[in-house]
Length: 499
Image (cartoon, rainbow, N blue to C red; front, side, top):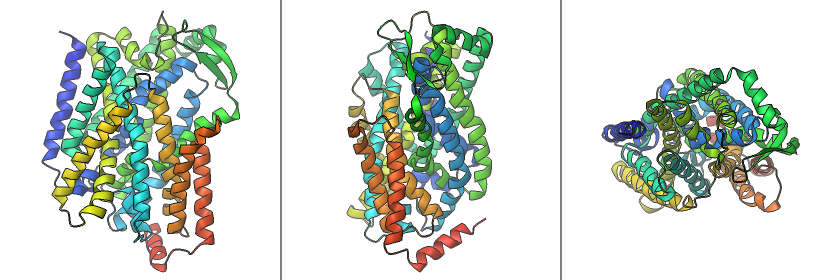
């Protein structure tokens, strides 16, 4: 029997079992969307990291490092993400947990923005929900593509069959258990991801003779692979040669570092802050998340990608297969099966979160608001579950193209959320003078900029103009228009005063 297949099967059965168990613990929409706000620090920490990294951590980022070494995107993205995540935990997590609970117990970001500004027109909620659904289609599709590449590279099955199987598995336990199932499985998956990258990178470095030897071998292939300021051209279909491609330039470095801005607007990550059982747990969760769930996986992924360059005799046609192929070469089949299950863990941990946030937008922000205002909690939970199925099918159609790139899809969705919601959330939490019209304008300008910026042909990552323009518009509209009411400002002062 195939040890890798046995390992996969055991892991998947365990995930589905968790979904069935938590199904009995999910009775209200708050349970389904936020787990009843009862996550402990360890679960919240690893759940935030696992839902953040997804398949791009074990497929997309190692693939970028395999294709370009230290330069181009890989190292600068890792630096930007590390800084952004630490700032997000340090400043946003606690304030968001307090504010969402205080502001009429808001359980979704659109609901929080509506309650924060007393928006009786519901315009904030509708605009937010529309952008969430739009960008999550791309993000969810990236996870499904990553899953398909995993099954395709491991078991050599057809891409479309692999895509469908992966989607059915992920939808299964998300449909059943909701946020609690997702968060518990994320704890397991986060630990597994960190361990996989830690042990693979350490083992590889020891086998090759240390970091010095790794960089010597990389430099002998192409000097650009060990130069953080140089670009590298790689084409696996054309002999797999790495060639210098000039300097990255300021635009390239700024674009890569700007990934860190995305953290402030990711609904599936911010949901973990909202769900932690007390704002007093945030400090402990921050230490766990940054130390174990952030630094180790990010830099482990870079090392794995570079190890792949010097390990394979024949360069890979698809650079995003590097982790999948490396563990099968380095480890025995049983260990390889466990490590490849970590890839599946990374994919599942984010796609399930994205499906859940999207379903909450449909059930809470559309269905209850416009169709059934008196809908019961049980009815809303089932609307959420059906929404998961609908969104998954739409993402499956978007991912059907076999040439889709995991990192490209993630890059676009990450910019969309970061530019649309990042400034609006930051100003809502930390600027007393922010107005409802300012928040509306910021959401629209940020989201539309991300949609339109690629048409300019600029190499600058769309996150940068989107985030900057959204922030400027929020400030200008808030200062030039009517300010927030005394009630809104008093609530802000009370939240700001909570220790």
